[in-house]
Length: 88
Image (cartoon, rainbow, N blue to C red):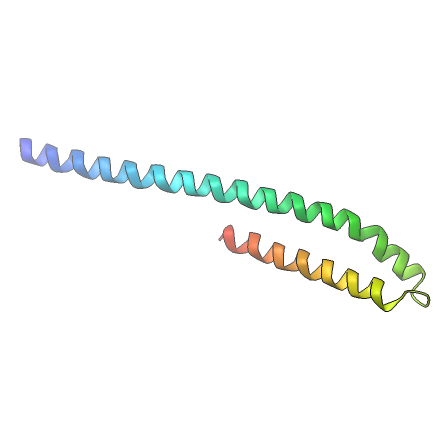
């Protein structure tokens, strides 16, 4: 009976350790995803008025402005993808 209790205690300790490790990893992943989200939101807010202005001035927009918007847009898209992958 004592040996069985020891096995149960070991199982419980192993499960508790795994749980604690996973809990920490999830917390860190969420914080990391939140930090990346905030950085992407800043880029999004910077990009919105540029896109609106580019739409209004499409005929006048230079290649550099459009290229810059594409780069920022791709950075945001890639960041959203990374966050989505972390949250799976």
